[in-house]
Each structure stands twice: as structure tokens, then as C-alpha cells.
Length: 396
Image 1 (cartoon, helix red, strand yellow):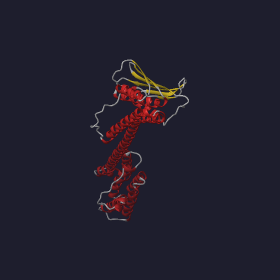
Image 2 (cartoon, one colour):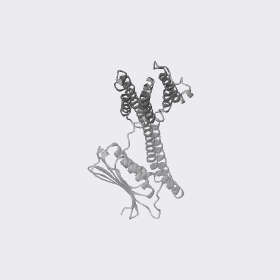
Image 3 (cartoon, one colour):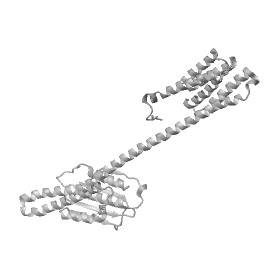
């Protein structure tokens, strides 16, 4: 437990408060040993008072040993001379200290051991005279010190536990906040890539075509430039929509629905308009999908077709089964143009989309010189029990 000093306490006093407290307690016990008895003060009384001072000074460092030594000293004082009444008060304080500072929690064992030792010594030295009303006071000092020490020990342990739980909770909140920030960054990066990469790839292809047409058929360059301008305007609008979401955390100004499989025909029409032949096959009746699955299916199809755009053509197969939607995009790798791995962020984004929807995705080269993306996403409303697996490799 970390102590916090009160603002009105000087720093040096707070730093040495344990030692100052021991010194004050030792002075009080010294005075009690000397003053509680009505008998004249003797050298033996000073010896008992000096022992109380030494024991009090060492009670934090050696709690059990000091208690055992004080018990033995008090028993000898009972056997060989009249003990000072303040010595019994010292034993109560040392029992409190042993219970509080010992590494083991045994308060009643300590109290019973001290009590039995004093009872045996008193019975031997004074016989029946030892038993009197004063024994109730001795019992209260010994067992009261043990009870107070155990109560203080448990309270400190409770405060330490509460403090540790608060620290762990604060650390967990910080870790959770950091994780959410990283997830949000990843989501934003994925959205930007999905939104921008498709249209930038279209612009790149048509820019290359414009250069070729401009050299050979200058009069036909205008439709190509129009496609470039359309794609550039589209990507600007898409980027604006993403940035507007970042500026408005509540997303209240955005009225555009989240893209899903219902926008797949518009995507295919746009690709065909720009001269990219895509053959589309669908098996099974289209039906509403969970929001996460619907977005993931559309983004995976968009990214796969964007990658295929570099190689001339593609085949898109969409199959709706009883419990899943299956998307397969296959494109030839035109010869002599080699297969280019690219940056890898597109494949990474598709994997993350499939994992978020609790689906599976496989990507790889086919033996015939084609590349295939095959994704299977669960179409039920409760896919949380599924396991997401991602494989990548060459198909047999």
C-alpha cells in the first residue's frame, strides 16, 4: 500500500514517521513502566523500562522474536522479582506488532502462547495469589492487542487489494482503449484501401490506354479521358465520405447506406463501362445477409475484381446456399505479363473482412495459369460460434 502524505505534513516528517512513531511509543512505555507502580523506582525497574524501549525499537524488524524475548523476560521478572505493571502493557503492544508485521497470520496463537507462559510463571511464583481480578486486565492487554493487530492487518490487506484491483482496472481500461484505437486505425486503413484502390487501379489502366490511343488514334482518346475523370470524381467522393465519418464520430450527417451485395450490379456495370469484361454467374436466390457479412462479401468481390483488372478479364461466381454465401473470383494471368504479387494489402484486407464475418477465404494460383479468390461467409444471424480460418497457397 502506497502512503500519501497529508499536505500539511512536512516531507521529512512523513519520510521518517515510522521511526518517530517508534521513538514516541518507546518513550511512553518507558514512562509507564516507571510510573504505573506505587513502589519506589529501583535499578530493576529501570532495567525493565530499558528493555521495553529496546523491544519497541525492534518490533517492526523482528516481530516474532521480540515477542518471544519479551514473553521470556516478563516470565523471568515474575519468577525472580516483582514485575512492573507497565511491562504487561508492553507485552500487549508487542503482541499487536507481532500479529501485524509477522509474515504469518496467527494472532490467537501468539496471544495464547504469551498468556499461558505468564499464567505458568505466575502460578509457580505466587501460587493462588496470582489469580485475582488483575488477571482480567492482563488478559485484555494480551488478547486485545492480538485482536487489534489482526484487524489492522486485514484492513491493510483489504486496502491493498482494492488499490491493486483499481490499478489493474485502470491498466485494463488503458489497454482496451489502446486496442480500440488500433482496431479503429485498422478499420480506417482497410476502408480507405477498399475505397481508393479500385478506382485508382481503373485510372491507372485507362491512363496507360490513353497514352497508347493518343499516339495511334488521337480522335478516340476522349472517351478514355472521360472514364478517367469519372473514376477520379468517384474516388474523391468516396474519400470525402470516409473523412466525413472521421470528422463526425456520431456519423449523423452520413445518409449513404453501407455498401452490400445489392450494389454488386452497379460495380459490374461500372467495370464493363470502362472496358473490363467480367462474366458474372449466380447460383441460388439472393437474400438479405447480416450487415457484417453483406459488407465483407461486397468488399471482397470489389477487391478481387480490382486485382483482376490488371490482367484483362475475370469471372465472378456468387452462390447462395442454405447457410452461407460463396464468392469466387478467377482471372487469367495474361502471358507474357507475369503475375505480380503487389503490396499485399488487398489480400490482407480480404482476410480481415472474412475473419470479421467469421468466414473462410483462400487465395492462390491455379495450375492452368490463373489466380483464384474463394471466400465462404456464413449467412446466418449468429455466426459467433464459427471459427475463422485463412489459407493461402497453390491449389491442386
